[in-house]
Image (cartoon, rainbow, N blue to C red):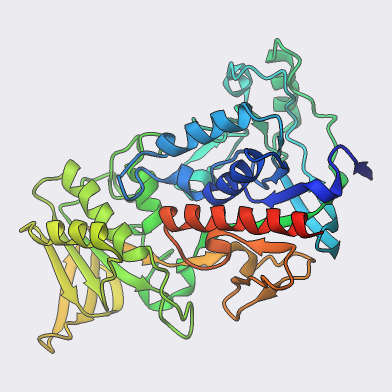
Length: 424
């Protein structure tokens, strides 16, 4: 075990999670003079935002915000980034924490030039989790085109033959299969948990058919289908036959506001589906889009304006009612759904080419709580104890939020972390 003493405990902040909230927290603290350790468990920074086609409020592509932040990180010597790293244990008190971090080997060192020769010779394949398993990728892979650090990864499952081929193909001596897992102990004064969220597992919602029928996808899968660096290079098509859908239905609150799943509103799902409707409209001007909802939430003037504009589209239909069951039409792959229109009181039966489940956001720490003195609410969100100080949750680790709200919250948590150091 290695003990890192490069940053004084009284003047350093650890940020756990390298998504948009973690990036904002780290940059805000570092740019006023504090040493920051940014810990990310994935091979690249960027978090959920990197998986989006566009994000609100300006419908920017992820490059819009991430590239600027990455440049700021590169230009700031006070930020130390560690990817494929996870916090295993935190001990101590505000101003004096000891943090045990586990580093998983990437099997590629800093010599990597992203030439791609390793991927060319590699025959082993793995599921592409960045695209939610909708396609496969080489076991020698670049996480995605905006990866930071921009460096390949070798999957542990790669065959011995492919390991030898990759090592031989690399002209820069960047492939190193002798790398071993290691633990490093850091001393820091404050910690901000920006561990983000994960899509709720739609397979747990028995009546909505996800996993049983191919042409039922989730809202985040639609983001990847619509993205140029996604599994279909930006074309939204049915998974079963790559057909262009002419009718698509959205099921809002899929698992949300449900005591058997997520009892809370996830804040972003309604606006995400409205955004997805614009993706579909851009590609298929004549497609019919049906949105089944309990209540539609468009928080704020800009979001309300976006919603109002979409309501004027004659091919977008809003049905106030909850989808009770779904089935697959024999021989076509089409999806049959049954819902109750709560305004008319009538039962609605409809068949569509494709069904999208607007699943909610679940805090990552709900299922993977760290060994640290943190308080959680029953849903797994961290409850910030400002009186005690020392450790704080930012963004979606604290509550469901969009990108704008997450950034605002992260700035506040950077300040809280700084105040912990100043007061000690």
